[in-house]
Image 1: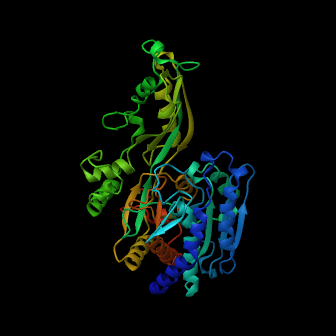
Image 2: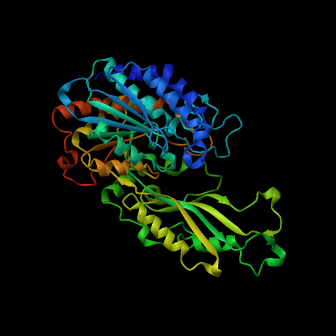
Image 3: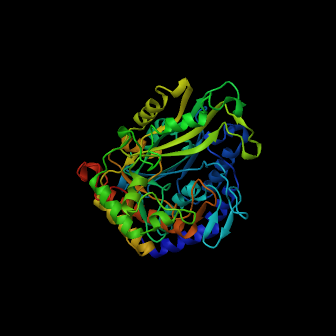
Length: 496
């Protein structure tokens, strides 16, 4: 593979074809089903599917088969099957994954920006979903085309683009089972839905946290009453909710108090955190839009990295039962509801995490209040298997070729449920988990953007890894990769 040719092809493909498509994609408010219960009726998800399907079918890729698979009652899935360039890799294949559903709008966008308003400023494309994760299908096919354009061989490639990742990927297991025979047994999984510590290196994800959460409600009255009449007699639902949350979290430090929600951090992940802290410095926290005078939760940078990637953490991401300030009268409200998002260590079982959350919040409610927790998510995280030598060399080569800097390895604080699922189904597979969500890109929040040069370089890097996968497959190095690497779950780098 000629890296310079790949670099030029990918850059032109992005500028002339991919960026214009992403501009149109950003205009579509195709929120994930959790945030748009009428997603079928509204039709935005279908609009996004049609946009990507139409573009993919127009690509010149010999033998490519594309189908929008639709299981009854589930979000659609785009399935693409690209044959190998020759018979030498046999049934071996590469699985490339992404998603097309989006997070909701959020408030706080700059006046000239908006979630469904694509705006290009310099190297950045602003708008919801471009980086998370609309670019995945375009980047995946462009990487394969970059190889075919110069006659570089590759194994069979399967592309899966789902439509409910932001809702926990609850539809995906059914599709993976339904398509099992057509997917085959990939020896390499490439996921383009992760983050990067900076835009100057190829970043590879070694672990992902799990997640448990849902709607937690404390109810004390049938209806609201005069606060002057009832306060001091009727307990405040907000105070009781705050009291119950203190069973979970130390309100002074943010530490999760339930020991069962913690997990031992492997030695290699501790070492990775220290290296990341050394490379990024205060960018570990300065990438976030702190207010003047605000400080992070710890002084030790490596501890901040571990807090974000291996330790449980609680966030309240929504509230109900409270009127806006402009219409808040002197009323003792009947209930308070909050949406809880509890991030879990990568190796903790998500179902168990949800059970521990329920046990803590629902037992012995104070003052006999009516307390409910409707769990929406209980997803297990993922810790990468040991990396095979061929993949480590490919990753390093790709980063040096297209970034002129060595690759970096780091856990991520978010959740990609598909990774844990694939790890179980394909225990011998290797993983390249990477992405473009870097400093200030603000996925899920206001002013989200895609760093276009990063998208180009990640695409080119994927092409290099696919090319090296072909060579390794011919040499017989991709079969039983985990066994070749010693069968361990934690290598020096783990995964990419």
